[in-house]
Length: 222
Image (tube, rainbow, N blue to C red):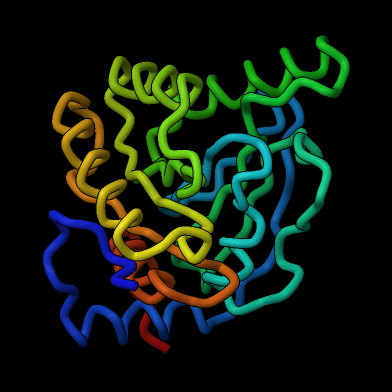
């Protein structure tokens, strides 16, 4: 299966190498925020990972960094209720956001972390891109489109990243990519291209690493 989604251009070998080297470096948990006043000022570019509950955010973060338990995975949707910050080689901050579209938790809890996430996404100048994760088996849902409209409104740059692409066939994946690409032309804040990934089997991981590496701070000279 071709994991890369048009209209992204072919990623150069040197870019793939840069992504591989960056994500092979140390990545550690820094802090978590459950309230707005706990949001840290870390002084580095940030990339946030957002998506519906159980879309596979934690699995993707673990696959990107080559670690089994950097981010906790769970069979229970909605487990992550705070914003978690991870530092990658003192060059990039990876931000794991609470999932949306699931409300088994108390309604007051759901409202609190939903509002916190929205405030983070709309008021974070160091946020370089939001990876909006979409389950390839289901495509864009109404809740995804709602989030996209909000991000368009505040001009917060986001990119569609399909997860669990190994669960559908190559033809279905190509059709999904094409239809989503067409949808993105109507969303001004959307990055013009999406990537289909599989945290389990690996397709698309190298491409996403390369794309995110371009957003990192320059490496310091030792």
